[in-house]
Each structure stands twice: as C-alpha cells, then as structure tokens.
Image (cartoon, rainbow, N blue to C red):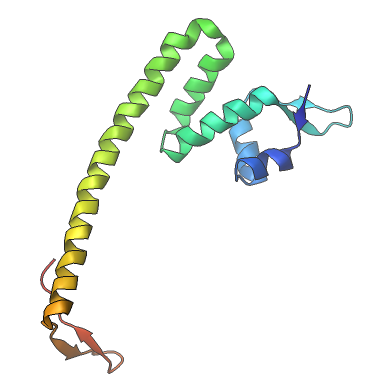
Length: 142
C-alpha cells in the first residue's frame, strides 16, 4: 500500500500543513493512519477524498456541508444517493453563482469597451488631482 506524508499531501493539493490538520480535526478526513514511528501518513483513498474536498471547498462549499459529505463517504456505498443529492445541490448553487459572475463580467467588459471608445475618440477630460498634482481623467458616473 502506498502512503503519503503530510508534506507530500500539502504540496500535492497546494495546502498548508495547518489547513491539512484543520481538515482532519473538522472531520473532513477519516482518522489518519500512523507509521510505526508515530508520524501521520495518508493512503491513496485519503488523497482521492482530499482532491474532491479541495474542489468542493474551492467552489465555496461550506465546511459543515463538506463534513456531511465526508461522513456519507465514510458510511459506505449505501449513501451514494445522498452523496449525489449533496453534489447536485452544490452544482445548482455553483451554476447560479457562475451566471451571476457572467453578468458582472459583461458589465466590466462593457466598461472596458466604453473606456477604449473614450480613449480612441480623444474624449478624455483631464483635471488636476488634488493629492499629488498629477492629472487624471474625469470619469462618467458608474
């Protein structure tokens, strides 16, 4: 069986050792094995679960929901329908968030295009800055 050190796991998933320990204490990972020397070591299935936890956390799944999901994983295959429900619920929230971000992205793109239009037309009014005596454009209302 292959084992990974905490350092290897932290590096592989771009985590600090403190975050890795926090995930353990928060119940996101099962009780970690110990080497005969007493050092913590992780199995391949720990790495698989940590990969998914990292993905879910990076997409803003709350720790409490992650803990619920991890408990379902540890409970066995009979919980697969519940796990699917947790993931589908998260997917719906993520889809909504992405849609909101796309609307905001479009607004930012519109503003960039507006500024390029102003610059191309030479329509930038310059007023002195009050703090450093340099010039800055006078912007339209946001």
